[in-house]
Image 1 (cartoon, rainbow, N blue to C red):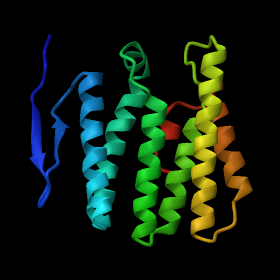
Image 2: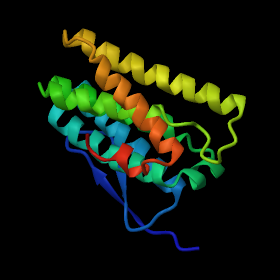
Image 3: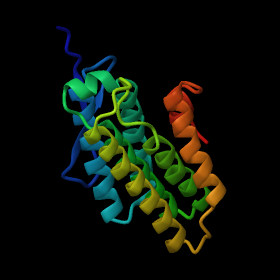
Length: 185
């Protein structure tokens, strides 16, 4: 089995190194790279370096999107793709808030809500566990959006929330492809 090399990049003034996948890589390596990007982004964020945090979280989002596209592989390897995606969207959104990009932050929280509204089980066999997980994911995404609105003193845009929830249901029913959820709003 081919295993691509990973490049290690050291962050300036940091104890954190993160790995960037080269070419096609396994789901486990993508997850490892995602974790290292999130850790690096968290360090930047903690140091109030919001530009680098935003960029690093955005790179983590690209990895999370790759994991979502490989849902079946990830499921067989025990990789929780939806929570990874939700965490990443929240991190990018929070960094965007710190940069004063409130409309962009709003889009990131909506993107998470759209994905969370997908049915948890791609196979069409909805177990109680899968439906419970979906409910938890939707609640997490809703809470993140409501928290964003409260922190930025914006009213909750009920129409956008409803549209996001419907978009997830349409993907589930086959009316849209997963790319419509992963693509920018």
